[in-house]
Image (cartoon, rainbow, N blue to C red; front, side):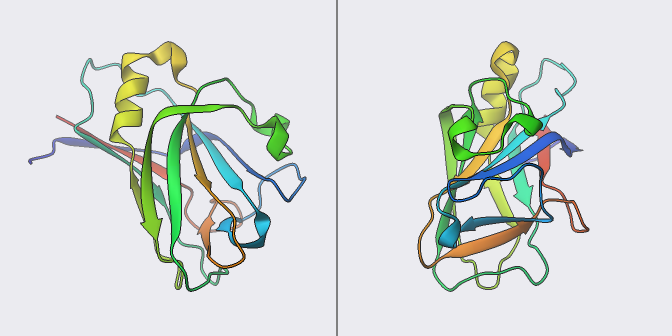
Length: 169
């Protein structure tokens, strides 16, 4: 498949919550799995220019955090559509998170060593383009466990922020 124009966006809003942590703000690293319990990364991106074109492909890229903690077992990350409005400063605990809805996608990552994660979010982005009034962003979640964890960069304190890549016809 020949892909046309590539558009890359940084998040306009970002928040991270964990079922095992109460904290405001965002650290330099985003850790999924391990002793944090359930965790979620919430991302909003500026609305893409309304070209009337649906993306052929769309990917959410999470950059590996240099020297970040990781473990040996595989971990599954899921990207979901956020179904309610939210503000980063209001997300301090797991119970305050907005609800999620389909469509969603999954990516199995091998955390040791943590590598870049590139999640295919084509269906989520197409849904948002068809229903802009319901576009509240994308959430990335992973279930906690005693074993697997993977660490990615938030873009704060160095490192690359999560990116949304769109490929338009």
